[in-house]
Image 1 (cartoon, rainbow, N blue to C red):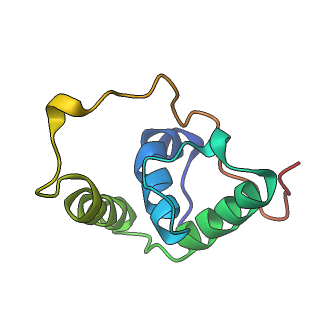
Image 2 (cartoon, rainbow, N blue to C red):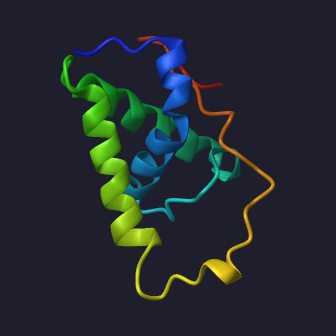
Length: 105
């Protein structure tokens, strides 16, 4: 099991959020705060499982590889038109790594 520091976690928050949203069959750009309480619990459970399954020496490459795959499969498709893209004013800063046994309120 990999140990990711809070700083490392923060640097990878967006990538991790996209990965978990896709695992939840949500649009990868879904914002964590837009999830209902049950979905937030599912998200955090999946996030913790994902992190636990990462390899110690290659965890950053694994996250980047999974994120790049999502970008290629879901974002930058032939239908993607950057001129129509309007970035959200929201961001996923509310996503946080829970300690083992900690529950989302």
